[in-house]
Length: 274
Image 1 (cartoon, rainbow, N blue to C red):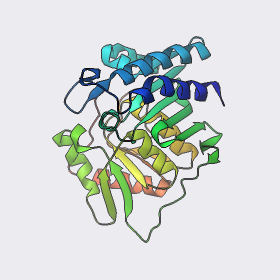
Image 2: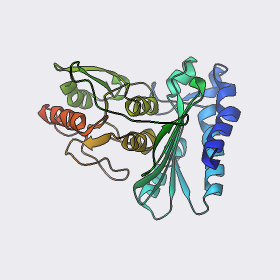
Image 3: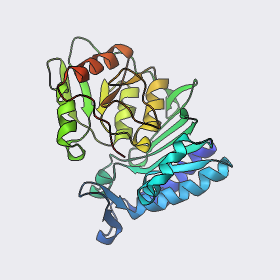
């Protein structure tokens, strides 16, 4: 077991799982709106991961969801010279609060905007996926191959959940309502990326840029043979604006098909907000 894998498992066992289905009302807070929740598990897990990961790689920094919420200037570290750990301590906080299993811990390692490593852990489902750039994507020791969709049936696509999208973003994603596509709102982003890497889902379409939601999953899909494209046909950039929406798909043809749908919409590009 790698030190990073061990750290993530240890923190989940100590800070997340003991609070799952055990949260008191005063351990849940609202951040930017009623659907944007944070719990004591999110906060404690991120603090622990920050301490452990920076000790494992001296000179590295952490861009974590909860720390950036407290101080948005920390996001700029993605453009700096230091290696960056990108952390979402509990991706899928709402399912976590509801006592469901659809949550995970996401960690990625990047340097100068390039993704190097990826870890996705769904402790309630006992799933652990990881990827290294150029070395493949793996789920519980089995190599992942995204493959290609079955072209005899509609594309299965998960998209940004309506609770988190503005009217303009909903219009941009409305192009997915078309013949040959079966679309549904997404659950936890990390688990949707894993579904694409496993070939269980053909593509995802998102319209927000927060690196902690996407970094781990993007590398997982890439190393499983998939591809991500933004609306202008370029890869997703961890730092800086992207032409939104963007997709991560099982293969190049599927990614290009979704980009063509985005461009056919009447909303134009939508740049996600942090």
